[in-house]
Structures are given as structure tokens and as C-alpha cells.
Length: 241
Image (cartoon, rainbow, N blue to C red; front, side, top):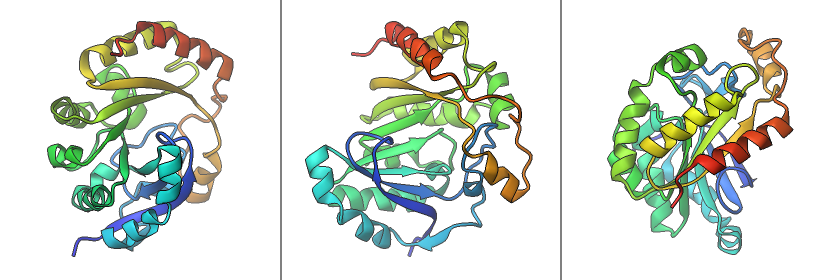
């Protein structure tokens, strides 16, 4: 029986996809993003071991909320693609129970993406940077993995919301956002929208607790008004059908 490592489960999520959602946070991530606010999800050795059946048992209790709000379940992390076999079984059970599925990912996993996307209604795709060099500097990894995932995504019918964190001095220029829009228009299929997320410092205390150096120490939280202006800019540049 396949089992997976789960960090936590949020039962009334409102920001990780449409409607009211159960958000299942998977343990494990290949990336070490400078602004990650969940460093406690990085290691696969952490978390609680669960079966897909135990996961779906928790999820189905909230179907009345899903039905009224247009919600469902979002598999997040960490990056759920790092536990692909377990994720696939969870997705299949959700679809058997008529539950809308969303996958919150940066596209860094261990494969089987074509099959996973057959059971994924919506992908919340976190695009980290606009260049390979930028990816390495921000996450510690190059774009090889995400490009493989994008190949599968382009063959799928999954709808896509792109998300991008706006960090002062790193990803907050109009030039950067314009380049991001160009990449999205050329590379990302089935796009419904792009969400720019303001960098915040709410996770810094976790680094202190885990004795992990925080790479963006001294960088202030992103000005939300500036993020709104950049959101207006990118919305004007996107080819959303």
C-alpha cells in the first residue's frame, strides 16, 4: 500500500484555488527558495505518514462546502510532485468522489506528470524567476525540472493559474514583470490568470527555530500598492483566451 508524508492539512482554505478548499500540505521539496515561508516542509523525513484513503476520508467531509462555493482540494507543500505515486492515488480518489482537484507546484518532482495531470483540474504553477541564472540564485536549482513538467502541462487539459512572488530588488521591476508575461504567453497553456504575490517576512521565525540562515535577511516586505500596479501591468500583457 502506497503511503505518503504529510506536513499538515488546512480545512477551510480560501487562497489556494477557487472556492472553499481543503489544502493538503505534502512534505518534501527539492528547492531552497530564498523566501520560502515553510522550511519545515523541505525534508521528506518529516511529517506524518498517511494513506490516500486516510486523506480522502478527511476531504469528503467538506463536500457540502465545496458544492456551495465551487471549491475542492488543493495539494500543496513542499512540492507534492516529489511524492508522485502517492499524489496520483490521492487525485484518483478525489475524482472518484466528484471533488475538484488543484495542484500547487513549482514543477519540481520525480516524474509521472502526464498521468498526474489527467486527474488534475487546476494547476497553481509557481514560476520563480525569468532566467536560468535567476532560478539558481533564488532556488538553488536550474530550470531542467520545471521545463519537463511544462512539457506535460502543454499536453494536458488542466487549467492553469500562474503565481509569482514579487520580492523587492529581485523580481519587482517593470522590466522583470514584462519578461515574465512574455514567458507565460509563450510557454504556459490553458491560462486562466496570473497572481502576483507580495513577499512577506512571516516565516522568518521558522528559520530561527530550525537554525537555518535566512537568505533575505534585511529585505523588507513588498509594498502591496506596488504589487497592485505590477499586477495591472501584467494583466495588460497576458494573452488569456
